[in-house]
Image (cartoon, rainbow, N blue to C red; front, side, top):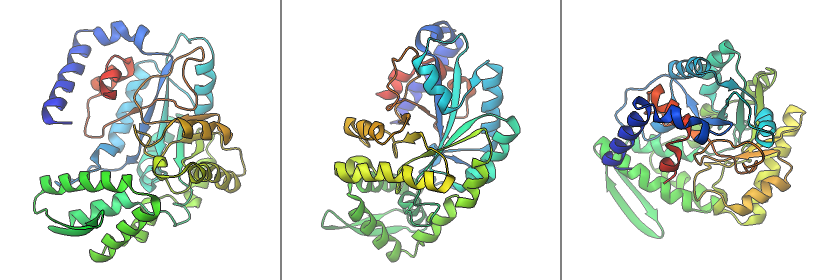
Length: 344
């Protein structure tokens, strides 16, 4: 989105909040409740180049968010309860469900102390190759190699490409370009591309991936907390549309099977990796249902409707932009009035 687009969005939520329009419309547009989507929880960083800042919140912001949700009289519920409320009549009190994608280590070190102190339920979506040390966090490796180099050369679609990236703006532009390109590749081609780049520019892809992910011991500690729901996010967290249907089905079903074996319990909830438009399709919704999941969440914006009007295997979530620190903006998003604009 351009800076002008971001400005208009900011003007929009401010107008909706200060005019009272969001609160006025909330009963009509806010549904029965909402699922919030987060990823990293860690202290703020000062680096100029932070291409994944949208995926990060600080522990302090998480604490402020939970306090605000309590003050706004939202009821914190588990994903099991989301499914029940989506099927039933609209409750008098709106709910919120907190979810965290990727089972990142910083959730355990920086996020869990906050969540535990507030004693609120939350769900963690686990890509099961990563606790095993086998997953490739290519998006983190891409950030690292661009951050530490002023020139990058690579082969894209059979052609040698060279980029001069001496300043933060050019680094950010290249990250966006290469992230889109890598997401379009089939997993074997993506693995070849990122491993080649990491070898050229001395980035330890395996070590970086392990360091960023929770271990099975970490996850076992979380799973022992009755407020925590352990859920699945496939095995390798691929872009599902980059796979043939049979391979996508294996990713979805094997992710559940590995998690069930590790935790000795039914794993009933699923998240589409990335979850945004173009990363999954209707066939993957069918595959998630056929794999036995009670729900599957996306990163598409929206609220949860009651009386069976929300598809339990394509549930929307409010994916919070970590650059945004305004709880007023969150209040407007939870009202539902801005979500149709956010989807476009």
